[in-house]
Image (tube, rainbow, N blue to C red; front, side):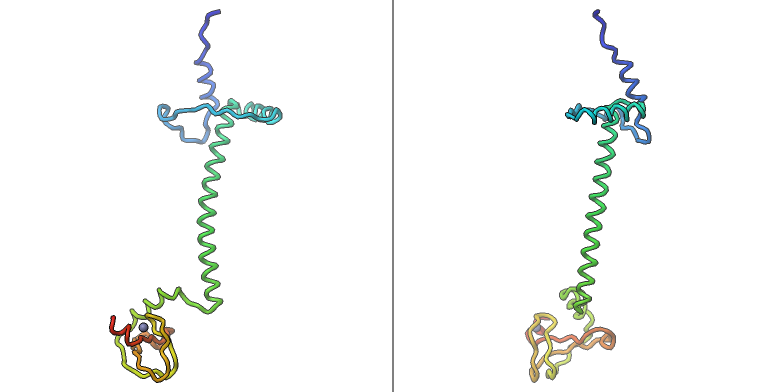
Length: 168
Ligand SMILES: [Zn+2]
């Protein structure tokens, strides 16, 4: 019996199996590959039954399952990593406010410097820290205190040591 294997029916059958609810990729763009996997007998039975119920080939069923699974996994991974980032940012913020810290030091130092309108040459009475180099300014030493319109609000006083003032 030298008949060619009937390819047409097989193809149309696969089409019928349908990729329901999916945007089909352009036929020529889709380059299908065959992937083989060994499965236990009962899994094979289950797959066959499930495929039959959906009136698609086992191959198509597996393909759909794999596509759905990996899309799903991708989304979950993406979402949870974004979530982890957000949660750890929130946790750091909460921890910082529990410790009585505000924003990270560098940023707030810049903010403080930004807010200063003028530097007043004064003598330190209460020990404080230079906003720039963090050096301690001791009682009796010369230092510069930032004058700013925001001073009265929740801005802490801004101090600058003479060295840092020269580098302004
Ligand atoms: Zn300094």
